[in-house]
Length: 152
Image (cartoon, rainbow, N blue to C red; front, side, top):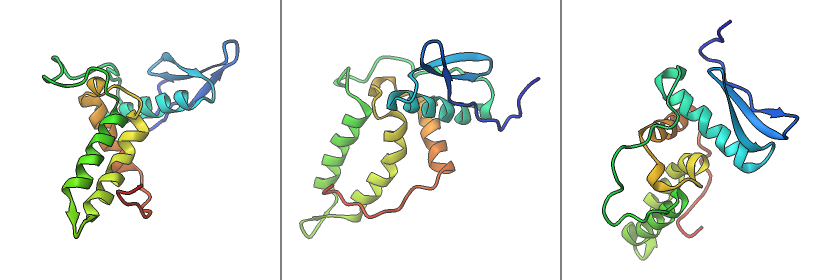
């Protein structure tokens, strides 16, 4: 029997191996050691990608942008490192009266879903499906609007 289209697959333990797994469209996907931050991160990423692609219908989780990385791109740069580089740029660019502007705070808040889903992934592997997943995460979840500034 098919599940409802709004069903979110469960994060589960496979007892014999101690691995975390999720079953998406009948496919068992192993996420790593059960309870580890890496397995939770991978689970969140898979669920976000599933929700972003075709309204939860079967998706190609491995779709990446085609072609080679742009000239001069660092081959092993992580998303989190890329965000730090942009944050450094923003603190120098958005300056008012020798202080970082409010744009820095807004940039940090906007980067939270990206970092939560893909912070430990290589930037070169970030493709259109990942972008859709981040966008969907921004639309779905309320972002905490705490105080933040570029000096964090």
